[in-house]
Length: 410
Ligand code: HEC
Image 1 (cartoon, protein in one colour):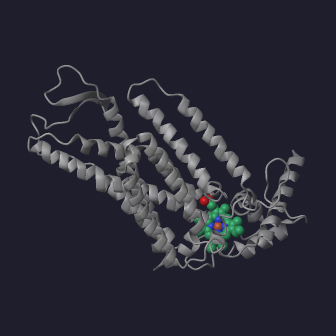
Image 2 (cartoon, rainbow, N blue to C red):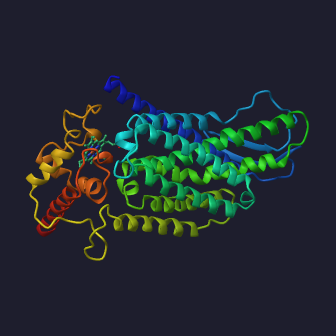
């Protein structure tokens, strides 16, 4: 396909995915908030469970929740499901577009496992299906009766699976795969549990019966899972711009702390929305996790063979490296893609506008090169141009000397 059209398809898919995600997360956060703030009051219509008053857009809303069929039930009911389905469909399309069509660049790292694109795609799709099945079984098992145990076991499961992904895929592919699994669990919760249960309840209520309260309870449980994992999932979705997150040697551990951090923040807001005293302690957890994440990514260089000083630093070559030499390395390993006219098949403009074709450009991007190719091995993608450890060490030396020179000038 024409590479320019192809590129725009990618932009369109991303746009759609972000918009659908905003609609889904927005409506689901809204309903969790509404549900928590409902108050039972005197004088509500028969069958009403609670009410809430809200103000928005220049008017007042009087929200009333019925757990039985309301006396004057209109024919028209708004269901909230396409937000979730559209988010998953566009997200999966994006996964196919970026990670399956670009498997050799983004999903596979031959140094991790020498997979063929089809094998990698098979493992990716298979793990989404299997991951959902295991999660669903956990929820239905006796563990599912205790929120605390389910939370703990579910958390352990996601972290373990993420570690597993790092044994199969490239660093970036593994991180995104973990996000795709969590997103798939969320969407499948809506498709397989929440909406079917809601349908059954509505059907019984419309027939004048009383619905099995278990159906609602299960739906609520899944919807709270979705609510709590939203923040970590959104981070993983933007993390492909942050090699320090996915490119660290222990990216699965970073993800574990991100999950704790995201759920703690969510818990703060959920508790506030119930009108309960604000649980400020959650911010201590979130802040602590943030510090640990930064410390982990400082302490986990991609090449942990040497230590200098207190924190392990990436190994630096012993010999001084000039800009011309550094630029030579970059031009053999990077500038086939990062040039005004890239010569890499399928890449038609310098990716992210990053030009690394002249010594001046290389010098201008020194800090980025450090994060992306020395501290982590995020570039070249999947080390496709076979940059050696020695070359990374030499870049490290060149950057370290440059920093020292700059410090001396100040
Ligand atoms: C095979 C082509 C290819 C090679 C070789 C390559 N890159 Fe990249 N680079 C890309 C692509 C594609 C992106 C955009 C990634 C994305 O979509 O997130 C990128 C993004 C970047 C970014 C911007 C990251 C961001 O999100 O802002 C930097 C910096 C970078 N590369 C540096 C390098 C360095 C340094 C090298 C050599 C060591 C290198 N690249 C080698 C294809 C390449």
